[in-house]
Length: 112
Image (cartoon, rainbow, N blue to C red; front, side):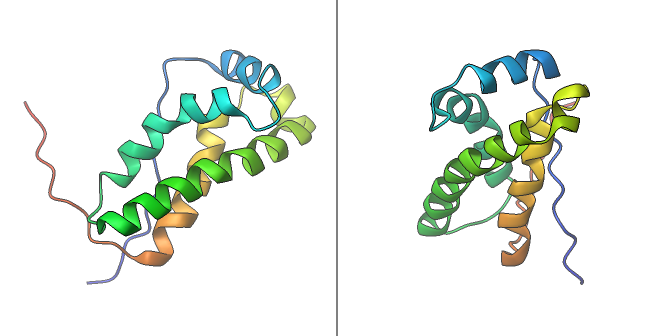
């Protein structure tokens, strides 16, 4: 069976303006943004089977990617003028880290 690329569906209760305010008011390392996005990173990683070492490495890499993504996001005038959420933008980074590994998805049952 062919590997189906992972496209994260990141949902945050905050709107684009709230997320932009966090980004613009954050420190140079985007510490608040990292805290804000950590639950989305963990959620995405928990959908797949990773060894403990892989999980820790991916988690750290994605937290480090936030700094790069935030600078790019803030540097693009179109992102600042539209109602484009940073969490949606960062979803691409999550997929780019996970997809090359072609991990096996966990069989997660949802409650009805």
